[in-house]
Length: 192
Image 1 (cartoon, rainbow, N blue to C red):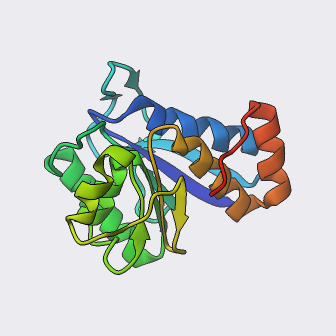
Image 2: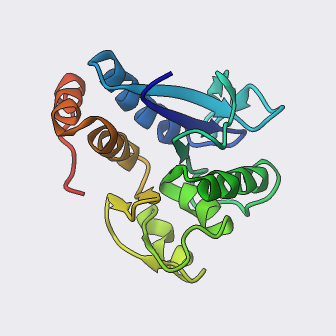
């Protein structure tokens, strides 16, 4: 398979828009010709997953630490401690990062990245309501929709997952496809 392989993590307690927003952007870009292969991926042995508001999602397979990009959704505000499935996800994210995957988060998914040790010595963002809490964990926080440091990308509150999706399209498929995707979705992306 050629192109960029992107796994969006789902697990019990995920924020629905954190998953569905980037998924729709990335899948729309793929229908427009972007070489993106997007999957909803679960923690091994934990499918289907139920979101915060009750949406149950089946998965396309287990989260693959060898994917080119892993997207980690949040779990609402304030985020719960990184325990159980979220701790297992943090471990998988750490493995993926060491293997060279780009790791991205939406909203409070940044706390999973912090637990995996990926936000040390780099700027990051999350939902405005818990930005200070992330900073108290030794992370250099930035009030922005998307912060891209190369191997790690974080995005702000829940709707910023759309901006993250478009940012990934631009990064892996080019500015023109990102523009066409935004037009198809009738979405005017915030400046990142």
